[in-house]
Length: 131
Image (tube, rainbow, N blue to C red; front, side, top):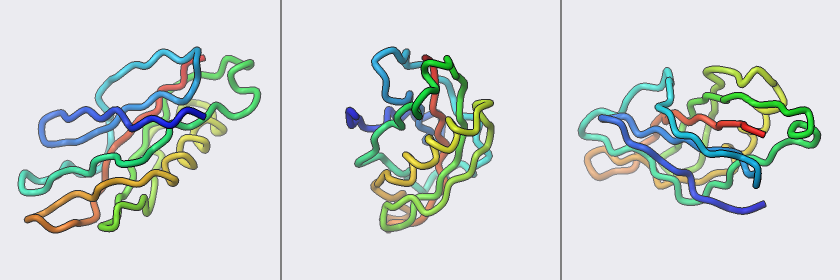
C-alpha cells in the first residue's frame, strides 16, 4: 500500500482533513468536513499529520462498486497518537467505515498546540470512497 500524508485543508479556524482511500482507480475529491468536533480556539493550533496512510479498500468492495464518504472525528492526544475516533456520517457501507476508522487509528500527528504546549484536540476527517 502506498503511504501518503493526509491532505489537510484549513478553513477558517477549523483544521480538517480530506483523504481518499488507497487505490489507482480512486479520484480524489476535497470538500469541507461536516464534523461535530469543536473548532480549535484562535490560541490553539490544529493537529498536523506526520504519518498517515490512506485506508485500503477491503477485499471485494471495489468489485462490488461500493462508494460513499466516511465522515469522522478523531482525538489526537498530546503525544500525537489517535486516542479515539467517532463516526459522524456513514458511507452507507459498514465495511468501508470500519476500514477508515482502523486506518486512522494507525496514524500519528504532531499534536495541537495551546500557548506553545501540546494538547489533546478533536479534528474532523472524511474519506472519499470512489471505485
